[in-house]
Length: 179
Image 1: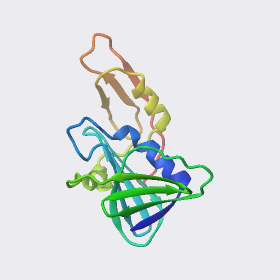
Image 2: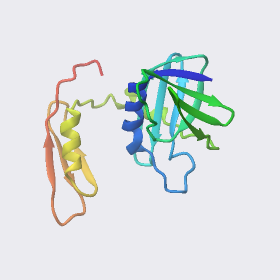
Image 3: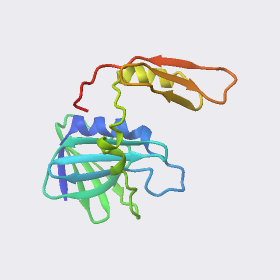
Image 4: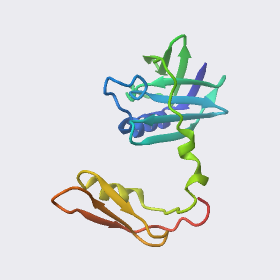
């Protein structure tokens, strides 16, 4: 069971999912990124109990399979393509002469696909510049609330339970009806 992926895409996927894993010593699966290879697509899923990330990239594979990797970016020097391979109870990422292996955890991964069904969220679809929304959220402390009124109005963001009131407003962008 082997998948070949562009190294730059694999590296980007691992880096972007790193913030979504949780290694608290209690849960055996949350410290990993779940990799699913199916029909020429590699899907990575990571979760930490509060958020879920999913990304898909193109790959070439000899069969469909699932495996788990840690959010560690191996050394990828001068390799255009990398492989993820499942052999016995280990997943290996290979880039040129460099090979990193991950013992596969036991247990069943969480059911996350229902959260990515676009139709579930059709009642209100609002587009934002991800950089602006990210900066607004990162500049705030503690728990925050996002209030939406309609797709053409800004989102009002404020913190809760703090002595210092932090408020932000981020304007939406046009997304059309393709969402």
